[in-house]
Length: 273
Picture 1 (cartoon, rainbow, N blue to C red):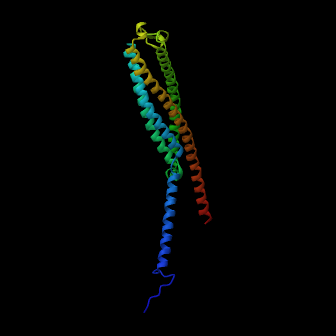
Picture 2: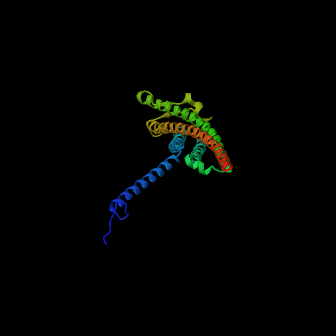
Picture 3: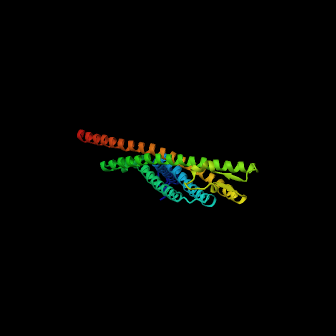
């Protein structure tokens, strides 16, 4: 007896091709849906703030360490003055940069937990919502304080950059005018510690001028300019964090209202049934 292959038969080649195409389309739709779901879970604003913060922190730590080291060498080798607090400030700024980087990672995690469908999953319970709002409030206050700290660092670095730019201007003026064998810093004696002699405030001789201008001041000026820009970038990142944390706090608070409305709706439907 011969077998008949109808159009609707599962053993028909046409049927197998149609089902294969349908499975491929269904798999493609599932992949697109999962990709879209992953994209909605990314806190883009917090991610941008984290990238800015890491770039600023990286440049800041490297340039501040280099600039502070050169400033200390200038005082030791050129002006014969030893200042211990420069090394302490350099260490404190590096530690502050490390703490800031750790906080940036934690705030990125907080932003991920309060974004998209992750927020609906994590902050479903009452205790979780309270903990989420409390964490957002704590990091909001820390970001507010750190913003003013970095603004203060920005102001200080701007002043230091202006001083080294002035020093470099004196070096350029000395190179143009060959009748001046020395650079005098007597008028800037208020920048130096008490007890600095007048002879130490004179930079004389080609070797000492090259050591001061080319080896130290020129490199230190560029380092402090970059550190000033980096501190501005970190302060800008903290402004982004402030906006993101305030928004996440509001989202978590609204999530509590949405959960209450859903519970009331379920209760109403159960009563009506």
